[in-house]
Amino acid sequence: LSPAIFLAAAMLLCSVVSLALGTSWGTVGTVGLALMGIGAGFDIPMYWTAGAVVSGAFFGDKISPLSDTTNLAPAVTGTDVFSHIKNMMPTTIPAMVIAFVIYLMAGFTLIDGDGASFERIDAITAALQANFTISAWLLLPAVLVIALAVKRMPPIPSLFAGALAGAVTAMLVQGVGVHDVLTYANSGYSIDTGVAAIDSLLNRGGIQSMMWTISLVLIALGFGGALEKTGCLEAIIRAIMTKVRSFKGVQTAAVLTSVSTNLVAGDPYLSIALPGRMYAPTYRGMGYSTLNLSRAIEEGGTLISPLIPWNAGGAFVISALALGIADGNVENLLYIPLAFACWLSPVIGLVYAQTGLFSPRASEEERQLWQDQGEAIATDLGAAGPAGEAPIASPRPSS
Image (tube, rainbow, N blue to C red; front, top):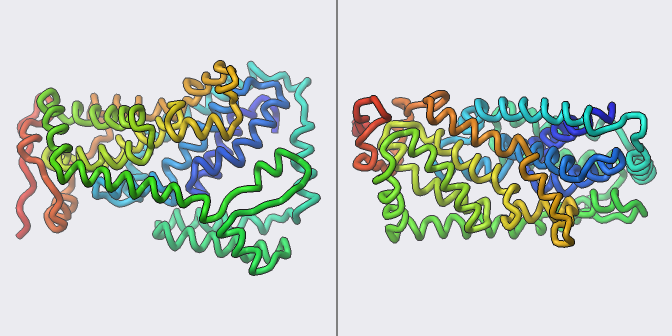
C-alpha cells in the first residue's frame, strides 16, 4: 500500500478484524500495536495512528454480532442483536465515511512517501514467514465467521464454529497437535521469535484472559438490577423526566447518561447496562422502539469508553498502544479528538434525535412482544409526546 493511505487503511483494517473477532480490545492489542510500529516507521505522530486504530477497532466492535457490548445493549433493552445492528447503520456509515476521508487527507499531508521506512514491515513479515506457514487457507476461519454473521446465525454457535475452524487449520497447516490447540484455547499462545513486535502481537489470548470481562458484565448487570429493585432507577428517571418530556429529550438524555456513567464509573459495561435498564420503560411508554435506546447507549457507552483516559477502555488503549501518558507524553492524548469515528457517531445520533430522522416508532409486533414478555411500560412518564404531537397512547393490552 502507498504510505499516504496508511491511516485510512489502518482504520479499515482494524474495523474488519474487530468485526470478525468481535473484540475491540483484542484488535487494539494485536493488529493495532503492529500498526503503531509501522506508523512510527513512516514518521507519523503516534496520536494520529492511535486515533485511526481506535476508530476502526471500536467501530468494528460496535457492529459485530460477536461483540459482548453489541449483544449487551439489545439484551438490556429487550431487542434482538441484528435489528440493533441494522438500526445503528444510519450513524455508523456516515461517521466511518467522514473519518475515512479525514484520515486519507491527513495521510497525504503527514507522510513523505519517498522517505518512508519499510524496515519494520519487512521485519514483521520475515519473522512471520520464518515461524509459520503462510497460506490463503488460513483466511477460512475468519471468512466462515463473517458468513455466519451475515446469515444471522446466533453468536455463540458462530464463535464456536470459528474457533473449531481455527483449530483445524492450525493442525492441518501449521502442524500443531490437539493438545497444543486446547492449551492455546485455554491459556493463550506463546512464542519467542526474537522480534518484539511479533511477540507482543501473538503472545496473548485464551479463555482465562477473558474471565475478568465476564465478571465485569455480571457485576454491572447485578448493580443495575439492584438499583432497579430498590427504586433508585425510578427516582433517577422521574427526576430527569421532570425536565424532559419529549422523545428528543429522552434520546439525548440516554446518550448523555451513558457518557456520564463512563466518566464516573469508568466501566463501559455499566455505562450500557445501567442506562438501558433505566430508560427502557420510558421508551415503551412513549411508543418508541427501544432500538433507539440500544443505539444511544451503544454509542454513549462503547464508543466513548476509549476516549476517557481513566475509563477501562481508555486505560487499555493507552497501555496497549504504549502511548506513554504516565511518562509525560501527554501530547499523545490527542488521539482522543483524532478518533473521529468514535465521537462522530453519537453526535450524528443526537442530530437524528432532534430532527426525528431514523428514530423508529414501536411496531405492533414490538408492542405485542412487550405485553407477552411482561416488560415494564412507564406510561405516566411518557404521557407527553414529542413537541407538536399529541400524547402517545400506551400499547393495547394483550387479547
